[in-house]
Image (cartoon, rainbow, N blue to C red; front, side, top):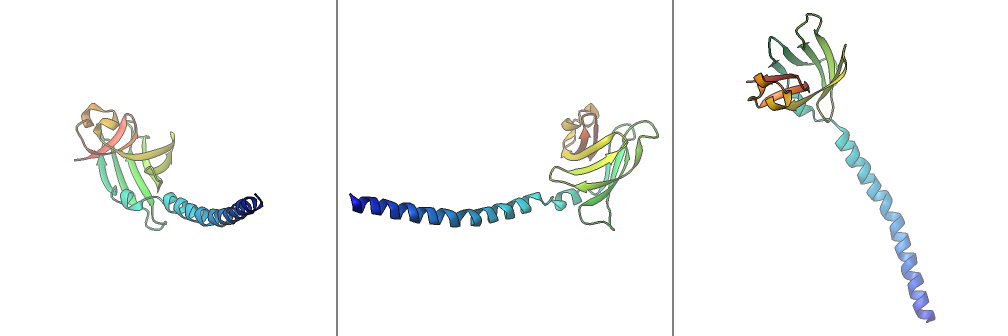
Length: 140
């Protein structure tokens, strides 16, 4: 009985020691993974550089913001039918797309298809960027 208790105590002590050494290693790799995952994919958003066409004369022209860090863009847009619904906005790559701010608030430009734009004139397109339902730009 004493031998069994001693053996169990030894096993518990050994397993307790090994448990203490494991979490730092796994938490280090977890933080490395989190750091890697938090880096936006500039290769994807860099492919969006160029001109995109909306409906009724609306357009989006994306260019790299060369003086800024990678993943920064200039978005020249005519996003509404009124003359004041246009401008050039600074954007930054995120995991979901390109985040930017304009007079109507914070926006997110993300990849989609014509169906995602919510506009029947673009419904058949496959290569599109969408700000919101009713606002999208496509390439032919």
